[in-house]
Image (cartoon, rainbow, N blue to C red):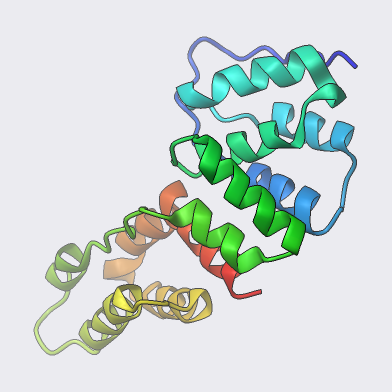
Length: 191
């Protein structure tokens, strides 16, 4: 099956991996929610501009449904910002075979640094004694835990968005694709 390549404007800025693309790969393996052809179509429609991902997209365009599942696991590692190594792919394959989402998420996030909260900038936007200082500290504390809770992080972010002087800083941090990928992986590990 040949997949048609979609053209992109030469003026496009680098696009980070979308959660939809990473969700599609994860769902393909764990939920069996789509066929291989549907997964390939979705990945090509929502492709990232990450240079390391481009050979995988070209291969998917070229071989279509003849692509081995390991190609999707390798692409998933790339989209997670991780190096593609045979042993890692074998561990991901083992996690998929065992239906172990937690081991899968751990492998995807191994060695990953947690997203830095701009705590100084947030605190600096507030007057002394403001009640939001405690919320910022609570969010920072949750992020610092060995096993942070995606639900608790999201709850703290929503609380911080209530204050106009913090809204843009916290929104920019929260909307960063690296933060969203981190939250997604925490959520997957909690399933």
